[in-house]
Length: 363
Image (cartoon, rainbow, N blue to C red; front, top):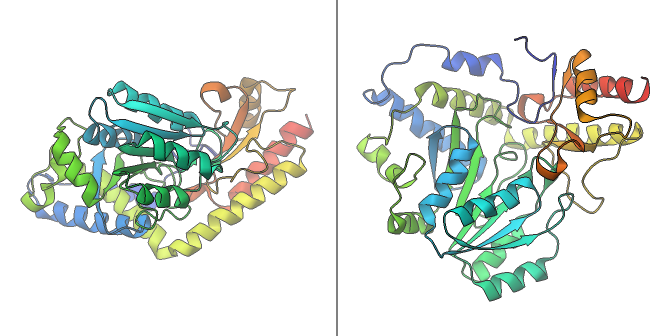
């Protein structure tokens, strides 16, 4: 299959050649060579910089969902109370995941086009429900929104909630994720979004408080965090490590940090602002409400009434542009542009917008 001429899919994103080159070699056995351990340790340290944390970071083999599931199963037991803050597909989905483990889940939900704002209501729930864990999604990719997390972290500390779990898969690397400042115990990321690496690795920051609970729970499945507690010290990982995947992530992180985090964040904001402004000037309606916080990594747009999603997608593809649809109750109603990682590029965005304008307004 040919590559997308104008890639605007909100993950997996287009992988730079230098990242592909990092994994395009025949590595020796990661179980035997300390060179792999050195690379893993270096990659963990680079992840700490992007996560803004002093906590340890576990690098899983697999797509981002392995981090979401593993962090829940490693810290929750049946009956544990979970307060799920939800504003979209993944926020509500995490609530369902926790419930499937047997947790007692209470959902604080807002509309899919909104972000968290009613801090008094959230505080009342924390105060009365007394959860073991609060869950939240930073960037709701299907909605194109970015939830503020600082206030949740303050409430978590004020009411001594043991764990704060955050899905940052679609925001990490493209906007500040202040893991320690926001008191996040388990912060989840993936290689295939802003990092623009193949979907081979998922990451979890683990606080000291989280490690204590992980040891108490004792879960040791494939996605478990517990086996990583002493994996580096003993040079004994719970399954065959993916040297190719870690090498790709390491190179992707080097690209981000060589550019400079502040510059990367600025680039994402600039492309996102331009995207939203131009779409509105075309007469298109953005999905996020006016008082919601839009994401700097993905923009969600209402599909014009004269098009079905299938027709719009086909017309875009005929002109070289590939965007994303959406999921759940948003399926068939919105389309999304993933201006994240390698795709947070002004020239690429200009090309994408020209196609959108031609299809929507001149056909």
